[in-house]
Length: 178
View 1 (spheres, rainbow, N blue to C red):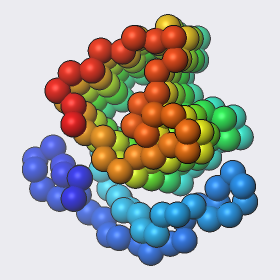
View 2 (cartoon, helix red, strand yellow; view 1 turned 60 degrees about the vertical axis):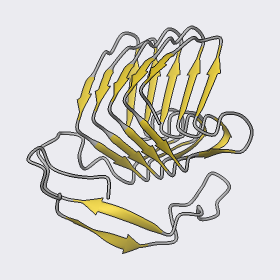
View 3 (cartoon, helix red, strand yellow; view 1 turned 180 degrees about the vertical axis):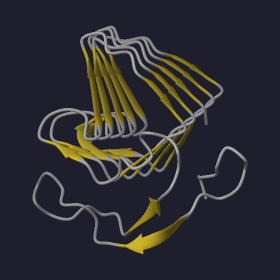
View 4 (cartoon, rainbow, N blue to C red; view 1 turned 90 degrees about the horizontal axis):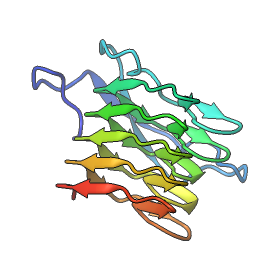
């Protein structure tokens, strides 16, 4: 539903039934299916089913590591503290045309921006991510003034604050999102 190649053709893949990854409480998550993608040229395309005992289940950017992340799929990643898929700490990556689906973390289930991490997030899809605390799709904290444009937020959830986005001491710019 959400994926297509650069040429508008569906990417190879299939739905795979699963009970979901084991959550932080040791029980399976609520997700019942996942989309498995294989064979795309993007270097981060196969970043699926990763976990971290701390930050950034798939990618952690720290201390000025300003990655350029394009046309990538991040699914079923888990981080024990923040940023189920990606966590940025004092870094400002460009994230464009990515899909974040079924990622989990206590804070910022798909994307966590902390300590002046001024990411630019464009034309991304955030769907079915879950935060056990705050920021179902994204968490922006401590002067992380993220630019978010053309993004879709659908069926994300948080146990406490910000089903889609939680901002704490941050002033993101959000434009043309649904």
